[in-house]
Length: 191
View 1 (tube, rainbow, N blue to C red):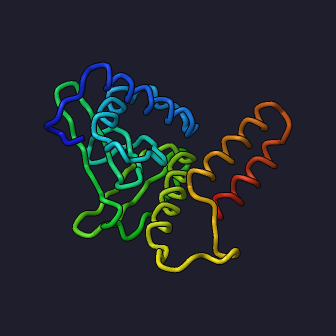
View 2 (view 1 turned 180 degrees about the vertical axis):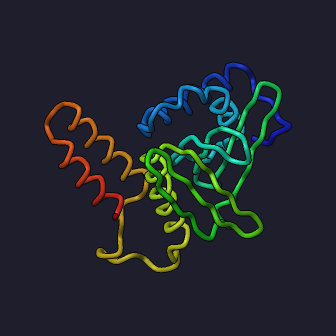
């Protein structure tokens, strides 16, 4: 959807619900403050765009939501009377990095013509955000003309999410321990 287009209220509510459901699947820490940003995200996501990961943080003196989709990295800061959306198209992102503090982390995005530094992101969420975004960038950079051999084939990012979600469910049910969960999650993320 383009910024100038408007959706019917029923369509938007359905889309907002889809975005909220996807956010719950991602199992990020508390983003309850981000209701306004989630509504904006639902409005600006394109029909064929997939939300891979998100976290909260501070960018250019604004507090908001940092999201990686199948097409771009977005920072959305919705204030009472203002809206700031910073977009980094994936095709222009050269790298992404993570720096850790005691409680919070910093995500750095390096793109042609624009760099971004998102501070005060929850450390665990920020690390996962960078790891998943790197996988998305790696998939973007993978050669598309040659079929991967068995050793080169890797699970699509969406499958990795599903596997992590299943592991989290097993952990919550007490079937596997926290240590087993973390070890398997690390292996799935290729760390």
